[in-house]
Amino acid sequence: MQNMASSFVGFFLFFALLVGHGIVELEASHHVYKNLQTVQSTASTNQPYRTGYHFQPPKNWINDPNGLMIYKGLYHLFYQYNPKGAVWGNIVWAHSTSKDLVNWIPHEPAIYPSQPSDINGCWSGSATILPGGKPAVLYTGINPKNSQVQNLAVPKNLSDPYLREWVKSVKNPVMQPTVQNQINASSFRDPTTAWLGPDKKWRVIIGSKINRQGLAILYKSKDFVNWVEAQTPLHSGKDTGMWECPDFYPVSVSGKNGVDTSLNGPSIKHVLKVSLDDTKHDYYTIGSYDNVKDIYTPDEGSVEGDSGLRYDYGKYYASKTFLDSVKNRRILCAWINESSSVADDIKKGWSGVHAIPRKIWLDESGKQLVQWPVVAIEKLRANHVSLPSKLLNGGSVIEVSGVTAAQADVDISFEISDLEKAEVLKPSWTNPQLLCSQKGASVRSSLGPFGLLVLASKGLKENTAVFFRIFKGQNKYVVLMCSDQSRSSLNQDNDKTTYGAFLDVDPRHQKLSLRSLIDHSIVESFGGGGKACITARVYPTLAINSAAHLYVFNNGSEAVKIAELNAWSMKRAKIN
Image (cartoon, rainbow, N blue to C red; front, side, top):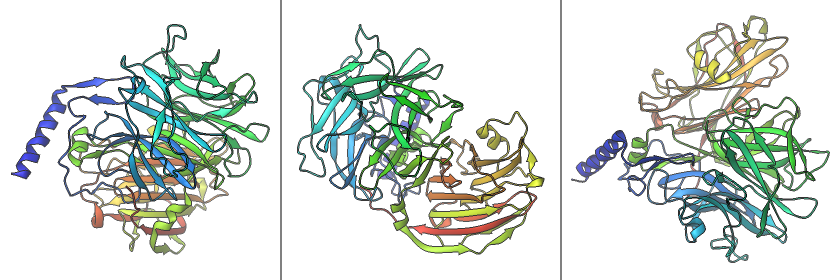
């Protein structure tokens, strides 16, 4: 009877989705399935897509990471969570803590609707450490009119390292749309970590838009409670649409250490990141911040909008950084949403995971950022396997055995001796994602595709190919990095978009390195030591658990050399 009941519920949910009853589009980046927001799934015990070492709660919907900080030696992760179902809705700030950013202990939700200024939802926001080491959180609340307003909350007990209880300001909302300021009440959200200016006033930006112009609206405050809108935004972008989850922070022009969010000067550049609601991608520019005029100016040559620099060229959104003041590093966290259907999400009883936290710093060129998984993740490594340096002839496929291929960390580097045979890059080939889509893993060239086949089935009916191609461009060689999901699953209901990025590495003088973190339904790949990152969600039907395989391949006509390969099985992290 139980099986029949669950089948009936599954059919009913699927039918409800098909006919579209109760589906509403909000200006909030998410479809709203009102009839499904409180449906408790009878989730199957067979869960081949749940992760082993990526952050996710036991069930239900999650999205943006919020309020990231370190306090009394503990890392705090708050996140958008629906406690009642596997689709977006009923949003609260769930809360977990960690000693290493890998293993996490759950706590009760920290912030949930309780005031008029957040009664219809507690949306994203950020933490700021005030003088004396006191944390404060600014977050977006949805009021009874469904307007987006900004609220303040502080810990109830500063002696509690777990910060389990929070108190909301009686002054809430501390920032709100009015007739006078003409701020768009449906597009005013996601306050950043605040920083101090030379006038000792706090500054914070909130994402917004006017028609198609994206805005970083700036507010100032002497006491963190009473906020006044600045006369002009910190920055704006033409025809970019809504700027969600903005992030604004300084980076050192030399070295990999993180710096305090209020720091400025000749040895500092600034990063402005925005999550574009239109494309669901996170873009950033590097530039200069005039902290007297409160204006951010991207460096010359910066591209704003859809064709600009991205943290990650795959599934990676609503990212947030924070300064880890204990280890002097800036840490980047983000939400990885599903590529499966809503019906499948409800069936499995959960939706959304978080990426492995990454250390982030400015590249030596000063023109882009570099990211690398936090080193603590390496403590989960086991069963080390290595391959000796060898030539990989065109058409070769070599299995990497001895690791749990569904839950692994693999690091490989290639050397190419004869670059003259590289395919010529046509001037029109400027979009790397489109180029990877047209030249997938099955399309043979001279130098490429070569790389990894991950979450692959025996016989390769299913596989996700992460690979390089080398082209001959104008006066230089161009490296293309791709993640090809087109054969990732026999289930045709999944989004199997192929992703791509150009990698700023010179193959004449540098090895081509690729590291992939494989975790059942996630492949996080880092090219060139973290100069280009691509995250994919895949749902194989054959290549699951012990039936998954890992291969090195070269489908180009020319041989390439494997300089080094190291792979490890990954142990399970302790998560919630």
